[in-house]
Image 1 (cartoon, one colour):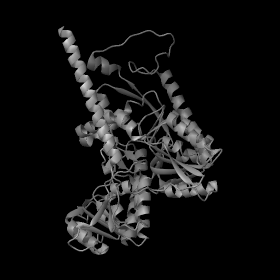
Image 2 (tube, rainbow, N blue to C red; image 1 turned 180 degrees about the horizontal axis):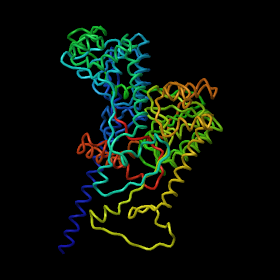
Image 3 (cartoon, rainbow, N blue to C red; image 1 turned 180 degrees about the vertical axis):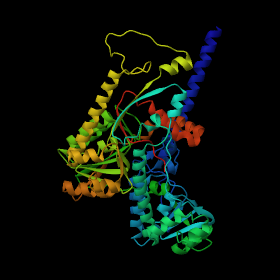
Image 4 (cartoon, one colour; image 1 turned 90 degrees about the horizontal axis):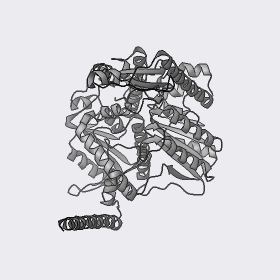
Length: 583
C-alpha cells in the first residue's frame, strides 16, 4: 500500500512539473509572438561599442529571443557592415557615436567595419568617437571618425604590436609524455609548443614579417585619417610618448579631452536637440532589430557560404566550426540550384583536418566547373583555410588578413611512461599483424612506423602544393618557395600571387556578379540558421555549460580551448595555422 502511495505521489509531482514547464513555455512563446516591433524615432544617433564582437554569421540567443530581449540577435560582420550602410540613407539616423574601449574583432574584421564607417561619412553625416581608455585596435576603429574625444583622465595604448606564444614542452616532460611529431615545411611551427621551449628562428622570422605588415597597415590607416606620417607615429610608439590623455591631444591623436556628458552635449548640438532634452541614442543591436535589410531581388541568386572556425571531418550541429559533411551539403545545394549564378565563399579559418579540407576543396572545385566561385578572406584563411580557398576564380583578402601557411603536420603521443610512472598502469596484448596497433599511446613508435607516418604527411603536403599550383596557376618551384608552412599577410599574399585583390565581402559580391554577368540578384546565405525553438531545445544546455566554464576559467579560457583542441589532433594529419595568435 505504501508503495502505491509513493508511486502515485511521484506520478502526480511529475505531471504537475510537466504542466508547469508547458505553461511557462507557452507564456514565453506568447510573449515572443505578441512583442511589438522595434522602431527608431527621428533624430537618432546610432551607437556602436567598439568592443562588440561580430562573427561571420549572426548569433541568435534563443532564450533571449523568446524573452523579447533586443540583444537576442547579434548580427554577423557583413550584416553589421550593411546596417552601417543602411544608416547612411536612413532619415531617422543623423550620425554615428562610437563608444571606444576594447575591440572584439580581429584585424580584417576591424578593417571591414572601419571601411564601412569611412563610407558612411561620405553621406555627409557625422561620426563621433569617445572613450575612457582606448586599446590600439579600438583606437584604429575610432580614427575613422570626424572627431575623436578622450576622457581627460583616460588614455590610449599606443606602444606598438607584440605577440606572445605559450610552450608546453616542459609540461609534457614533467608528465613523462613524449610527443611524436611529423611535419612538412620549415616554417610549419604549429607543433612548436610541444617540441620547443621558445620560438625557432624560422618562426621568429615569419612572425616578425607579418606582424610588421599588420603594424604598417595600422599606422598607415591612422596616419591618413589623422594627417600624420607613419614615421611620426612610429616615433610615438618607440619613445612611449603617449602616456597621459594630454599626450594624445598634444600629439594630435585626438581632437579634444572631454567627459561623456560633454560629448553628448556636442552631439545634441549637431542634431539640433535642446540641452534639456534627451539625446536619442540608438544602440546598434536595437537598430538591428528595427531594420529589415533587403537581400536584393529578381530570379537570379548569389550564394554566400560562411566558413568560420576549425575544419573538421563529419557533421557538427553548431556554429563557428567547418564540418566537411555539412559544408558538402551546402556547397552542393548551391551548385545544383540553377538560380544560383555564383558562389561567394567567405573563409575565416586557421585550418584543421587536412582530409576534411581536401573534401571541401573537391566540392568547391565541382561547383567552379558550372558557376563562378569567389573567395573572401576574413581574419584568417591559413593552412586548411587556404587549402579550401586556393581553387577560386578570384580571391579577395584584407591587407591584414593572415593567410598562406601551406604545410601540414601530424602529432601522436607516447604515454607509456606517464601511465607507468605517474599512475602505475601498464599495458599488454596480442596482435595479428606487426602494425595492427600502430598509433596506440601505450608505447613509442619504432623507426619503420615513424617512416610510414612521415611518408603520409609528405604525400598530403605534396597534394596541398599541387592544389595551389593548379588553382593559382603558379610554377611549382614558386609555390614550394612560398609554402613551407609560412604565414603571410594579405599584402604579401597579393604580391606573391596567393590572392588576387584587396577587399572585403562587398567587393567579393560585386566581383561574383560581374563574373556571372548578372546585374540584379538576391543574396542567399549558408549555413541556414536553425529556427529559434530548435535552438532553444538543443543548445540551451551547451550555452549554459560554456558560460560556466568561461566564468570559472576567466582569462585562461583561451588556453583551455587550445589544450582541448590538442585532444583532436592525434591520428589526423592537420593543415592548421601555427598557434592561436593573440596580439
